[in-house]
Length: 297
Image 1: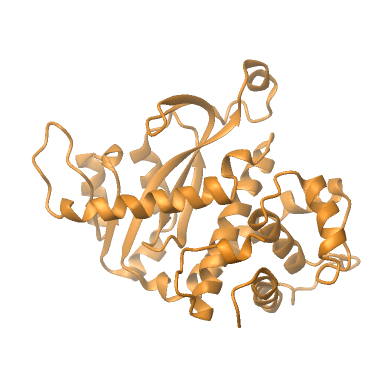
Image 2: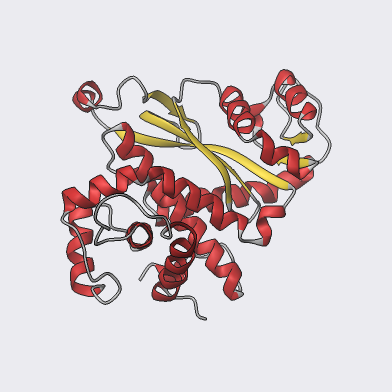
């Protein structure tokens, strides 16, 4: 096996088809199967197409051998939005099918997902009431949109994720994410969770400790240096590397979603593409697990 887009999509199709497309549904079987739909969405993200119409034109011309039937843009958009529950399961399945799944060191971080750049857009957007104004300290800028929270392994494999109003406290969101997957945490025994100082909270650390999670974070100005902080400089590079993959290579901030379902599936689409690349690199013994360069052309 080699690291190229066609091989990745073939392996991903087989995995999804074996696990999910054995289900029989009422009515006529769709011309584009669920497995093909997810593979098509992953390829779109890896190749950097933010416009669904442009992507389908490209796919018809260059990928007709892999996808014999391609719907029109409205049909593709509708199928993709309805496939969000399936895409979430695929992300979890890809992670669970690697050695990274058993890693007892997790990293959590939050990154902005802008959903509008002007006041008229904010006022008429269907995401109003879910999205909100927030501040990105890394880039010293305000934005209107959501925050993506990722809990992942050191190589970047997603374990848990969520989108939230940026005005909700980071500690509150993290606690809700971990509580939602309580059974998964209980299977691990002891977990080392690495975060930045934005998650500092005595109450949160107490809650995590009760769940068997040790929180490693930088000290705040009014605190003493915390044990293990010497490890955090290299970890920060890992965090920035994953964020750069999502935003620089997979165009997270150019998602183009205007509704709750549209934003959700477009973010999930990019997380799936990253997870699929890491999964395939692991399975094929690639020298650099986090690199997706082999799949973007």
